[in-house]
Image (cartoon, rainbow, N blue to C red):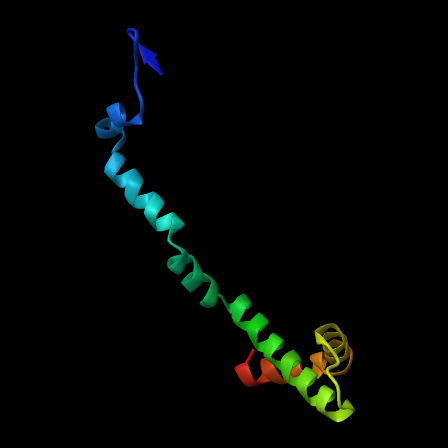
Length: 97
């Protein structure tokens, strides 16, 4: 920005803009730990993690039965079709919802 023939950058306006506070806020926003904590504390994320854990258990069990790794996609599809509804119902009843 030019004023009276001089270019002014953000540093010249720092005191007027509360530059210290802007730097503090940007540090908080870009801090990955606070974002990670927010995500890990999310109910949706915890439910996703619990469901994923069940799918991985199912993958292991079915792979052991067949004697080879069935892969995540097959385990996911099979678990959703054959087990998800009952698992979710049981989980919701246990949570008192």
